[in-house]
Structure formats: C-alpha cells, structure tokens
Length: 82
Image (spheres, rainbow, N blue to C red):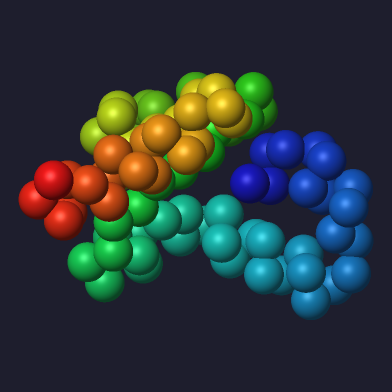
C-alpha cells in the first residue's frame, strides 16, 4: 500500500500515515490468520511484491480492476459449495 504514491499523497494526516504503515507491515496476514477469505487487488506499484509474497494463491490476486467482481464471486461460490 505505501509503495503507491497516490495513497501517500492522498493521506498525509499523521493518524492515516500510521494506519497505512501498519497495514503495509502486516499486509493481509491478520485476515488470513483469522480464517478470512482474502482477495487482494494489485496496482502497478504493488504487483510484483504481492505476487512474490506468497501470502495468497495466484487466483486470489486481482491484477485487473475489471476482474474484481468475478474473482470475489468465484471465491464466494467456492466457499458456498457452488
């Protein structure tokens, strides 16, 4: 998240920066540890790091914004046994 300059430019308040730094540090580990079904959206700035992290299977990382709904629907369908 912090590697995206637009996020940093848009959120310069100290409390937002602290929250963004913490979110960047723990990434989606907390959600995964809690048993949540995580889908991550990659940006041109986060694509390489997100894929290399190994935190999520490739099919749970969305590289194209227009694919978000389809990926989320697939994950929901898999969890519902559809």
